[in-house]
Length: 120
Image (tube, rainbow, N blue to C red):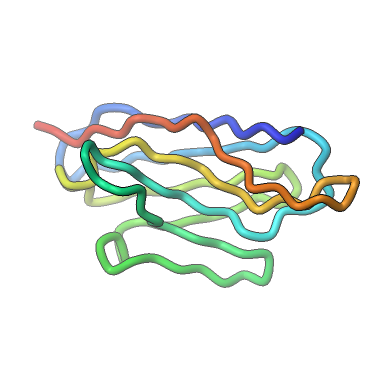
């Protein structure tokens, strides 16, 4: 079984920065996609950053130039550096990983989420 644990959320003023981290543990052979999603109240969950093992990344226009995803494959970890935060970035942020387990099964692993609140 694979578990993801997020950390780094909190309250920040507009224009500030936060860094989220997520670490995976369990029977992991390798991890391809590492992603961050967010879900604001009464809105659908949306992808805010993607990284794959080939080094490709993706950001939607809403966060491009402000958010940066990075990964530490040796530690099965992914980080999200969020700069120039806006009120509309307020949401619960979820870590997601596309995991290949030791028994060769693929698993979509999700963290429980961490709250990010941007407010003066």
